[in-house]
Length: 363
Figure 1 (cartoon, one colour):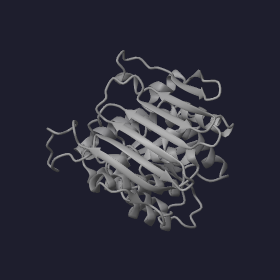
Figure 2: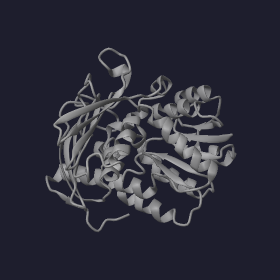
Figure 3: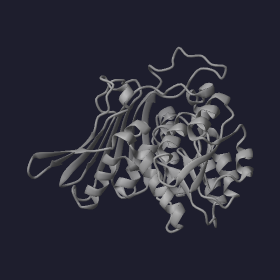
């Protein structure tokens, strides 16, 4: 039995609990969260011991691995503390809210034997996995462009409203979009060299007021990313598009074809309230023809979380690494750094109106 210690028992932490419960030979043994309501709810679901303080969970020695799902601004100090242990770590995205903090973690982790895996769930969505399989089989030729559109509901309410402020999230283009920079880099097999963004705070949260001030997170953006191998990516983000039939579409285009994954959002935000399957569509250039296939996700995985089964599949891979002790994390600290780097540059570009050059900033 692999015993997880969960630090952070909010919405994402509880999604992890539900998915770990579906794995054979794994359990959440301990939960830490300063919020009594969240801690109590998570501990009850997991039948785990609850702690108000992460340090008490760590020193209890109840766990074989640690899972960080706390607010973004405490990821870096928590990882830093856990690096001093000899146990595997799975840390939710983003790795940290700034690239400076990411670089510090990379330096501190040098020589560590136990793995540190950054949770980039979007890689493990069944339609994305199918897309990756098709690209590896040469479906499009050499990929030249990646286009990602996410049109979705606004950020949900969180404890202490931490996700309303750039200082705590890193900004929307870090907090939410680190997934997409990671996907672009994975699909195009190159590192980014330049970022240009146009973004605004136009609809969401404009009338909200908190003790911490007025929300400053952007709610829509266009971002263009150039890569070292001459390829490019583009993100079209809208956070006030409830009811969109597809929450995300991810298209990869090469000289031979385009492959596009269409991914529905959580069922509770769908117009009819029902879960839907994802689809992958291949547009063949020579034949001027589209081939469409449905990508199935088991019902129990759709019920277990909002990420179309990816949280479960990621845990499967992480757990295999923990059990066998062979190989390295599929999403490394370096991958986590790159995803924050692009998001941070996009936030800077949106404020300044200038393209941000990333050359010379390797992890």
